[in-house]
Image 1 (tube, rainbow, N blue to C red):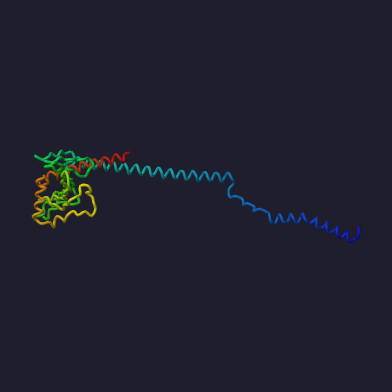
Image 2 (cartoon, rainbow, N blue to C red):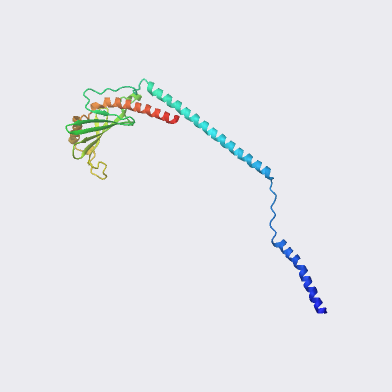
Length: 265
């Protein structure tokens, strides 16, 4: 083998023998995966800890639920006791009219329509081909002072709740005449009146007439007389006051009982 051939052969051996090392070195440098850090707790310990916290959460939740249920039951029971006490107070009061029957006055011309649960009653009658209806309300926000001459007397008996009334007069055809009235202690006052379209009584922008107070005095008196002839007059005041007070107490007791039933369910 010539010196040149020997040199070439030695060079090829050196290159071949170094290749595996170089490949291994490259794999160690570039393809090594990160080594995961050891967990703080072994698997069994971690599972036990997780179970512990789950149980703790369930315990706290059950305690909160039990506390809420206890508070609800206590509040409900307290409300029922208060309602029972209020019902007993209203029914057994010496001034109570909740169980009192209010007789109609002699020659009372109206049918009384009193629907349970309604805050008003309706007086109705037929008169000379007309249908007269009066929806009667008790306004406890406005009270009449019955002892105006004695300014020092502020006893509760010196006040009466105001009686308000909306009266409609209908004929077989044509518009409807409607009055807003208040019962003062000494008179039936007409607050307003209007003419309504029978087919569309709630029509907006319809001309209803001027305010009652600006009408000519003779016209006001004639309209008062018009209502009196149809049975709407001041003599109804005392009976309506007694009847509406009794109705309010009855409705209040029913309302309390309904509330108690709702709380108990």
